[in-house]
Length: 131
Image 1 (tube, rainbow, N blue to C red):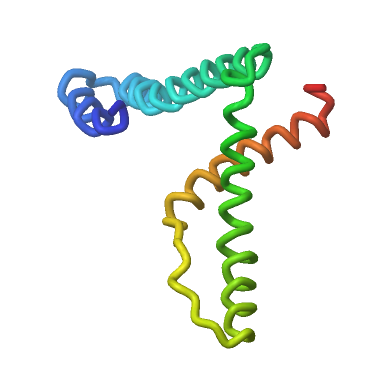
Image 2: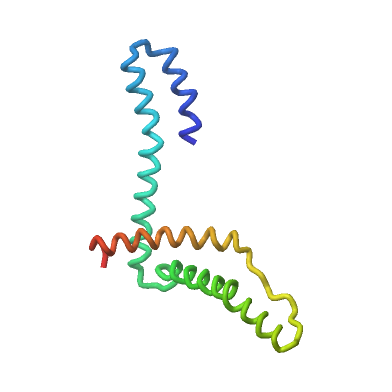
């Protein structure tokens, strides 16, 4: 939302601020405001994630591993088990009804997001920032 306001805000600066250096300084301040806000939100989310991971209840701290294992099982089925089942049934001479298919687009969106977070976790571990 802040980025949508950048254009009109800098146009207002052209009308009300005559000093070119001051105008550039204010324009830069406005442009970096959105980035600082996004960084603050990300830091807040990291703090929430840390607190969730510390929780003793599996229903609070275990949802990420659950989603990871679910995505892994779905990928295993889609890319390994389903083709092997179709191959095995085809060789045996039987016909097989259509196997269920997953919406791989949605699954990959979730998985790639988790792998990105997993990559950050690996980076933290290699730097000795976490246990």
